[in-house]
Length: 394
Image (cartoon, rainbow, N blue to C red; front, side):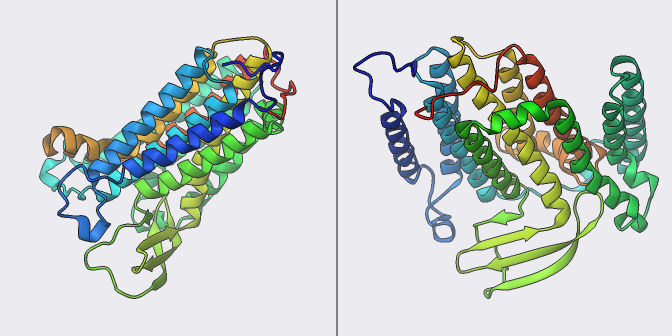
């Protein structure tokens, strides 16, 4: 439905009633999700919430997200109302996925289930990392000779892959090069975006609705990443201490060892682990996704102002990229549920095993795809004035 206010019978704030309806539906869905759908043998530990609730909630979230986007595309929803629906869909999907991950039993894989020996990790890492470095330099020289920052960013991403084997052994856990790679990554990604998309991002963030949508999406995805990686949990674990525990322990996460603050409050229950390396990388990923979301939100609203009725290909590319990146950490567990351990074990060893170079490749690929999608979206929207003023009533 268009938000044009030319009709005399149209109320001055057309989205307010729709927002109330959407929020009411959201509360109703959450309430319905509390109805047990599977056996309640785990009810004592989790208050009646089971794996089935997580699956059902995630599916409802996907339906709400897709339906909101389709209703916007067919002009049954104004862009702002559609954004509320998309945000609710993202939140429900993330919450359901975290519930599913937290309530699923952690599988145990033996060395016999490895698709190939870990001795292959070194040649794979060196060959893939070297290919990324060489390819970045070559493509940068040929395709973007006046933008050496692209080649340098590619070189930095290649170092993520080869670093554990450039400095083998325990020395790699605390080597200055490892810390430099991790600390430089968000700075360099931010620099590339500031140079190539800074003006558009600043214009987008002046739109209050787009800004709120982007920040909300980034926060939800940050909590999602914390939940699916096990660094945030609201589920009790067997053998956990019965008193409040606060400790700082060294943990190898993101190439090198970081001091990790661990907080366990069994009475809630709550477990939280936070480290600088974790916040840098997960925060960067979440911020990139939030900027993608803000760009989509601003694009939808600017398209309406310009009289366009369909989303651009850039929006579809961004949504597809974010979907692929966010689903990655759950591949092995979902495969184990659907296809059994015979299929899940190879996926775990290839993509989830922290020793695997492909797990680092997942982080590198996500950073490049999310940052690249922002630059692509800005360029594809040059013909659409993203700085056009939209009525605050939207």
